[in-house]
Image 1 (cartoon, one colour):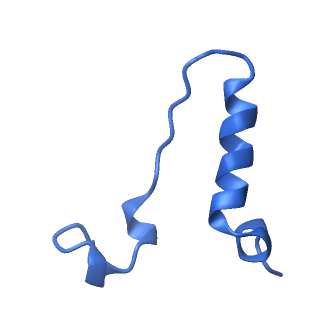
Image 2 (cartoon, one colour):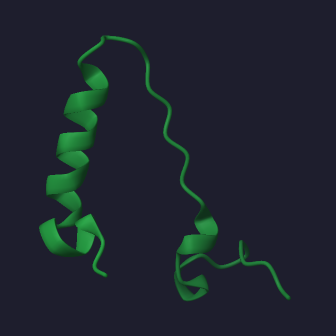
Length: 49
């Protein structure tokens, strides 16, 4: 099963998410797990094992 990002594209999905999150006028905090990124591009952040 393809994710929504695969089907619609990262930019389209994030634009929609941010627009919806801003509707109520409250601050929004986003957390991103660095482990989801290929360790080749995140030197010094990978975990072993």
